Length: 303
Image (cartoon, rainbow, N blue to C red; front, side, top):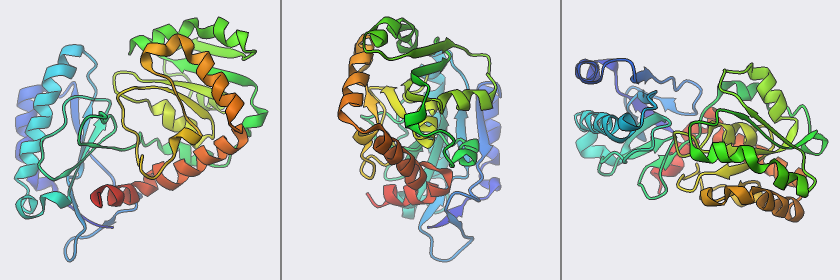
């Protein structure tokens, strides 16, 4: 896919306005590298899409910022997109990337393609994965799922959404099914290798939403061929028309967290975990790695 990146001079005035209005603490516009994305960057000629080469990164977690200031920021960025030279004639070919957990209102950008990590099911934005670079180093599976030593596992922050705090009480329910359950409250930036080793030593990984609608852990789980247990009622998933997520994802409604063991047991009794693991890894490698970003963009532009 041939993509044109708008040069930085188109953004300078906007960055100055943004800094005056919002400061630099809670928001960032990061230059986004597309060198390994599967996009063919061109300067002229026949162009398939126009990309605003800055990703909106929202770092704030305070509720009032999530509800108000971020919406204002997206409106400003939408206004900026409309000033791009080719937008008027080629709005449908424009791609805007909204990075981070922010799940607020969709950007009103006419026919442009808005890509969000946290895309609401009722909105018009398309969903993209959390792109996590070190997962490509673990594409050779170190422990097959049928050699896992833990049945159900979670390690992480339990304060970012009410669903997470409820999960801590699931141990007795899992024990009734004979599942061993490992649950660790941690928000201390645990050593990455240890975290991934623990994930790869389990069968089912609890993947609750946090400040955003989905979870980076969900994509880590797929990459390592484990079965994600997803608590995220409102999120879209990437490439839903291409990937049959039911083959390898356990979805638990957020108001049924206490029944999670029942959902996991039903999946375990009706699916071959080795085949589900293989399908999860294959889907991740085909659609969800960063080198497949261009392919994902192409599929969204064609809809």
